[in-house]
Length: 188
Image 1 (cartoon, one colour):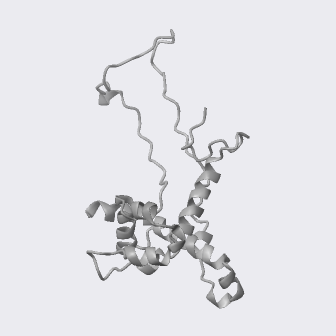
Image 2: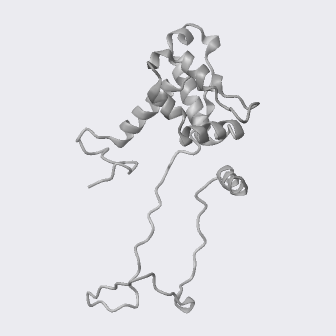
Image 3: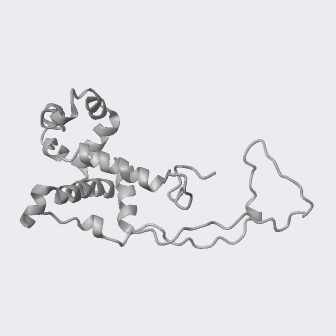
């Protein structure tokens, strides 16, 4: 049975649970919920980078705010704000921010005035679209007896270098900006 975490989970099965649609629904929910969060971030006040009270006052439609206070008070949200302030060009941050812009561009107020619409170049950029999936070759049984034997170990076996085959040069699967990002993140 396919996993809900599989990116193509259930896309061809008609059970009503499309992982892609579920992820899209959550994105729409969080985009709606935090569509004005950016007004309440403040890089100049590192000890209070997000104005919770200002955000809640502007978001009266959320009711008493108990649930949203829990979300805003979470370590995940705190880390999101820190990343938003320290490195707004990260793909995850740009994706979320441009998803908000895309939603605001569709709103009635913005639709009437083309001058208010903002571009979303990151969402339109197709250069990082997944174009293929790498499937590693199956394990080789070359040199092993073909008698149906099963090999089982209590721990990972010691490997002898003399039995290694020729190592193929790997294809580069990530682009330079992502590699640079991971190098920069490991320094912090």
